Length: 164
Image 1 (tube, rainbow, N blue to C red):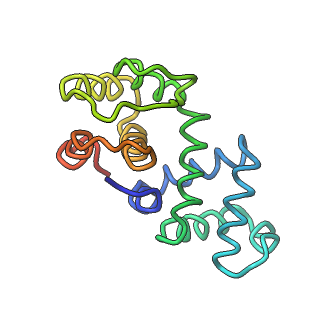
Image 2 (tube, rainbow, N blue to C red):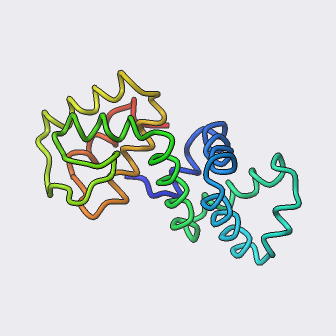
């Protein structure tokens, strides 16, 4: 199971850049919070980064977000992107598992999940959504929730379709 900063670091650079561009265009508050966290970690004022062209700023931000100390900021960025841009993926996965949710957000996850149900849900989302996005979501799902399912962790390690 990968942490948020590891997901940012291991995913294809084009996808990581797409996530930041989405936040810039669609989720300004999330983008500003991410930029502020990166600036603070680099001991800079946010305005220093804001004045740079995005083509220079985003690679710097992504390099910082891939560091362990930036896990919280990376997690917030990934959660925001998944909940806003890939709500259908979240809903498809939870529906296939039979877990009640509101727009892909869950209040209480079961402590365990049946292996067959989990494998069927993963197959469902892999047929409907881009493989890399599914891999990010499943890793984030297992690492960011209070309940971590050992069988999902095992599938994330063993199924090549869920690797970068």
